Length: 182
Ligand code: AMP
Image (cartoon, rainbow, N blue to C red; front, side, top):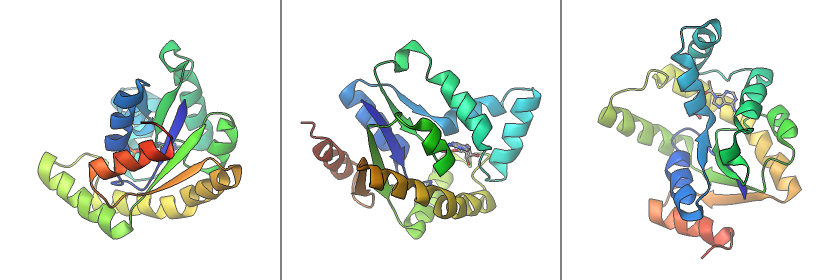
């Protein structure tokens, strides 16, 4: 099964993605993680990715799509995946065409996401790309660029909307129920 998780930063995508991955024995992958690894490389691409990420902008579609395409060729993803962070624009979704059987939207308000992120940073130390201005930019681009992706999948009939402001266990249970998994 190919599952995509969509939600604002702080919505709990990686928490729920990892729980689902364990439950379904399907690998989890996140484009944010892929880009953070790339940003560590002392190459032109690495430096470019780091700069764009730290400013809170999206990596251009063409680059993102070719990187994701390369990743998904790996044998571990042959039987499915839980994808976190892609697609984030309609252009990416169009490219991804048959890449998602089900799309789970974890719905959390901007206020709740900001509260969780400030708690997360206070807890673990700030991630380099989690400055207040980068977070604000990401929320803005979610509304502008990623919300249309929700409509795209809603029209296809593959969107599952989940209230992300419940406990981790409740949300996990609701996702399983909507996927018809016991
Ligand atoms: P995330 O951990 O999902 O919040 O991603 C961190 C950063 O990686 C984002 O702010 C973007 O700069 C970049 N990124 C992750 N996924 C994508 C994507 N699908 N398209 C463009 N940029 C992305």
